[in-house]
Amino acid sequence: MTELNLIEQYAAAAPIAKWLGFSAEPDGDDIVFTLTFDERHIGNKLIGALHGGAIAAFLEFSAQAALSARLGGGQPVATVNCDVDYLRSAKAQDMKARVRFTRIGRRLAFVEALGWQKDEASPVAAARFRFRLGETEK
Amino acid sequence: MADDAPEINPAVGAMLQSARDWLLHEHSLFKTLNLKPLLIGRNKATFSVFLPDDFCDASGKVHGALLTLIMDSIFGLAAFTALDELKPVATINLRTDYLSEVGPGGRVVCAAECNALRGDIAYVSGQLTDEAANRLVATGSGAFIIGARGPGRESRL
Image (cartoon, rainbow over the protein chains, first blue to last red):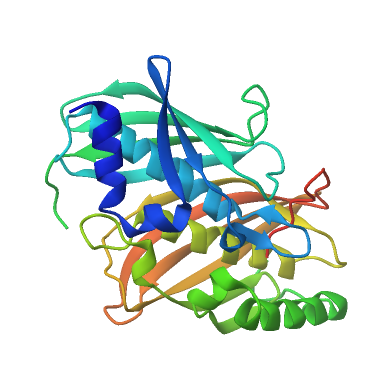
């Protein structure tokens, strides 16, 4: 099963992926993730900007799905913590993301995600995540 | 800035009142989360928030991303209460630590405090607690810019 298949499988099992309008598609050797815009993602209707929390949620789910797939699927991937930087305003439209693995160790993984809308060179948000791999205390 | 802080600026208070009504009744995301204000004061905002099934991960637990989403919203509101005049508030960055799992169907309490307002930057921290179990679920801290401008005028309430 390819990483893309594993990501799709991961997303299909998680209700939050549906809320996000989450999808993934190949981009050369890489994978690009999409948040398909919906009114529910708006933070302030008067302004019509994407909610910062929706942006963070999309980046975190993208990072988690990508990591799970890289590990072959099936292994628990729990977020330890995250930092999100909001780089510029995000409009009421689709958002894309790309994920980079900084380090994948035995117990921990360090992952970055970059999100953009029209132009990847002008990202709207950048996030760093630390994940605990394998079974952990609940 | 907590105990001897002045009351909320009346204009900001009026805005908060209308924002609260809008959050509770008009906004699809926040209506789903059934926000209940427990405390709104100068530099402080505490809300009880419902955790719907829509935001679960594959294991059936609430995805941590929802906790970040809740904190981003309530932290922004806490920053707003510190203002002396109406200005848009936008998140610069947010850090979240996930301390324990929580299932859907219950409520969490998000308590946020604006610790400092330095020029046009507000520093906010807070925590999420499982309302029924009284267990800490997540902590966070963030910086917010006051008077943010831009194409999207990224104010968030």
